[in-house]
Image (tube, rainbow, N blue to C red):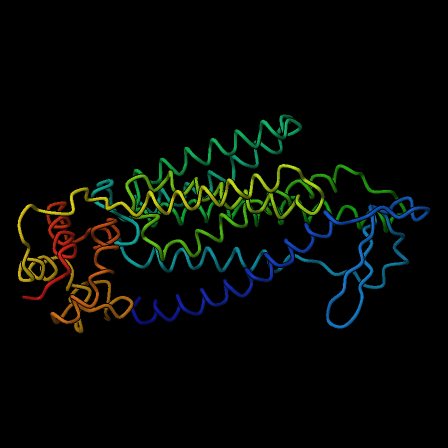
Length: 396
């Protein structure tokens, strides 16, 4: 498939993915909010789980949650499922377009592991299917009643998967596959647990029977899992544009730390209005953790920022010409790109010095560029570029 077609496919699928993802996340957050703010109704329906009053669009909404409703009282039932299914399908399609069809540079980093594109794809697919299978086995087993312990087990497995992927795939691909795995689990929760449980509830109501509370409890449990995974998955969706995360040596630690930040924010939002005493402290910890990560990751990976002697523009230009202009040029010679990625070009001295800060971030502070280090930039060359930029990126 030509690079031009892939580029357009990437754009349209990504656009669609964002749109349906907003719909899914919005409904998920809204219903979690409703459940958290329901108040009991005195003397009301014995099947009522509570009621909430809302104001929006110039009017009031009275919403009541019922565990059982005679079928004659439901003229039309609205379901929320296609947002989840379409988000999942478009996300997997995007993963194939960008990572599996987009070239080895996105999947492989020779400095991490010497594997082929086929092996990298196999590892990715195994992660997606295996992660979902293990999660299902855990939460369908009798051990699921020990919810706190199982949450810790799942978090431990997440750490192990992040660590493992970071040692075989490029940092960017490792991040994306951890996020995609969690996204698949979220969609599977809707498809295999939440929707079937709700369908059983509807059938029981239609038969004049009171639904088994276990169906609703299982759906609620998986909905809460999805709620806490949402912010980490959204981070992965946008994080591949920020190499100061995935481009670091300890990128898997940063990923897990940012997941904890997201979960902390979600915990605060879920519990603060209900009087959760620990919520403000959890939020403060998340904010402090995020700031600490920002400070830690600002230290250049190359270590030394000076070579001990003055670095000329010609020396820096030679490194860029040898390692970077294959992609970042008005006429790229790389086999993956027809145009300079993000419009970044190093054809002239003015372009190079004008983008010195970007070079520092992508090739000195992190190893994000060259992509997959396919041109073989050395640590010595990264240090040389860092030293030249530290001197003010002179052009003399």
